Amino acid sequence: MIEIWPAIDLIHSKSVRLTEGDYGTSTEMERTPEEAIAFYSGFSMVKRIHIVDLMGALKKGPEESEFIRGLIKKCPLPVEIGGGIRSREIIESYLEAGASYLIVGTKGLKEPEWLAEMANAFPGKIYLGLDAREEMVSVNGWTEETGETIYEVVERSNKIPLGGIIFTDISKDGRMSGPNFELTAKLSRLSVHPVTASGGVRSMDDIMRLDALGVHAAIVGKAANTPEFWRDVK
Image 1: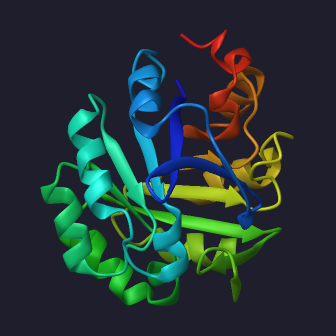
Image 2 (image 1 turned 180 degrees about the horizontal axis):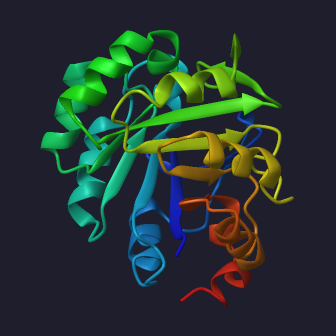
Image 3 (image 1 turned 60 degrees about the vertical axis):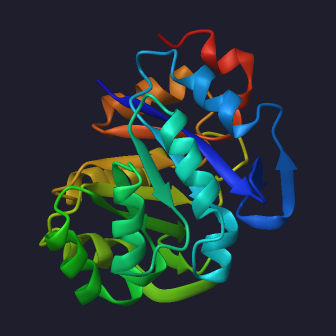
C-alpha cells in the first residue's frame, strides 16, 4: 500500500509553500511546523514526515539545522530531511540528531561518485532528490539545469544502495493540478529503488492512482493543508 509523506517546507523556521519552486511565491501555512507534525501523525497512512530546508537548498548549506533538530525530537514518526545536504558531516549530524533519512539533490547529481560513497556509507538512509522540468534535471533550488535527463540519472543510480528516489516534476509543484503520473510510473519501472512522487498531489484519488502505478509513496504539500484532502485518508 502506498505511503503518504506530508511535507513541511521551512523558511525562517516557518512552514511555507512555494509554487514551481519560485521563492517569490512563498506563502505561510496556517499550521506551525509543530502543529503540522502533531496533526499529520494521527493518520495511519502517514509513515514519515518530509522536512525541507528551502533556504538551505538555495544557499547550498543548512540554514534551519537547529530548528529541525527540535522538530525531530517532537515527531513520533520517522523524519527525512532535505535542503542543503552537501557533505558527510551534515549527513552524520542529522542522523545523530535522530533523522531517519536524508535527501541529497544537487551534490549527488553533480558528483555521482560522492553520492555512491555516501550511499555505501549509510545504506538505505540516503534518498536521491530528482527534480526536473519535463525530463531535464534541475539543481540548486531549481535554478539550474544539469544537462542530464532523469533516465540517465536513474540508470546510474540503480548501481548504488539508495533508500529510494524522490521525483518532483517542477511544473506540477504547488499547482494542485495532479502529479505527473506518466513520468513517475516510467521511473518506477526503470528504477530498482522505490520511487516517491512529489509535486501536484491534490487528493486521495491521485494517491490511489499512484498506488496502482506501483509508486512507493507520495509527498503531499499544499493539499496537506486542506481539510478536503484528509477527509478520505485513514
